[in-house]
Length: 516
Image 1 (spheres, rainbow, N blue to C red):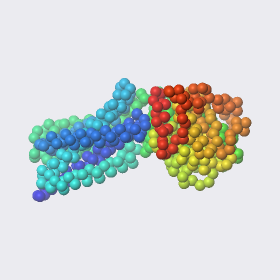
Image 2 (image 1 turned 90 degrees about the horizontal axis):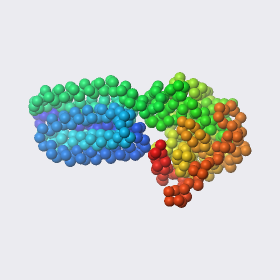
Image 3 (image 1 turned 30 degrees about the vertical axis):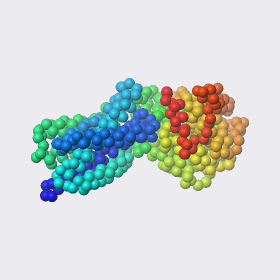
Image 4 (image 1 turned 180 degrees about the horizontal axis):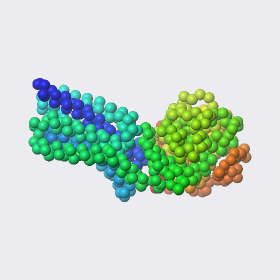
């Protein structure tokens, strides 16, 4: 093979690797979009990966019909991937803000299938062209597939560790699309001698390039205005961390924090939540000196804990450093948490709560479990018998734990399943619920190694909401929210512990919240 042909085949291999990187980035990007906007990350990633691979299969099948004009076909495939993929995130936010309910999901799945189909078209065409140039079929196939698979790994790592945290979902889509376009332009230039009507293809590349560059510089700002419509109040801070999408809003004194679109607190009533979370176990535990907070990176639970002078140390374990850094530096959060995370008693550890408890040594007098609801697999493990067994193992004999447990009104089966799961570890439990206007009626499960008596709980710290008398009322549940849950068939719902092997809590959660 002469040097000219060898140069062309090498470029085709490089092109296959680069477009593979772009393809896998779009694939995981669509999964992340679905997880953020539609919820249930496992479900959305499953659907997007399945649709993407199915699209690739359909595209590969259609490639049988492409026998001529291989290069120009590949170039226009890249043009389509660039324009469709580049505007995918931007359009998804627009659909969510303006289109009827359900349209955004349909749009995402259609885009995923389309990009998958175009990606499936690419590789057979590159293999066929390399073979046409003079490379042996078995060698061209092996090299193109190697470039494809290796590129897939690089693409996944790039998205997880650089693109999403540094550029966000909108800019990432436009940036990757620009790479697809550059591959197309490179192939167009190298094979220009065998391509007719170069002016048309060049003009198309220039127009697409202008659109993508405009999107790269201005698309995020426009998408921000779309996203603003998803929230009640003006957005004052927004960030894509390595773990989640963080949004802070503020309007007329009401500061709200959202993680992946889910409300974490409203400053107008967060004291109802955090006082109920902190003070009952602190009042019940004997000599509470060593405290563990799992979650609570906003510093609001720690603010309440620091009212107790007898506390010697507080260990706060939160997975996402972006949340704790926001709580340590953002003016609006500092006003709420009273700069609690900078207190000398507080030790912040950025780690998964499950992994932390597996490696931790010693006991804690009070353990506060202030984690997001179990709406996906990664969070579900923090609501299992295995996790609560670890909590028990690190709870001092005369200590107490308090666990946020979603709403006993909106998600009755979920709440009592969490309670059943805690009980299955051998801990004694006491059930509380409180009305929080921004959330609705919200539940907590208090746990201890010894039986819990309300007579032993006296709130002796300054509070805005909680009193001894109110605490007793919080243990009374109405007929439609108590553990005597009746199923549609008129039978009692059989409560069973949620485990890693049988994570049925996720399904119960989805069924409970689908209408809210």
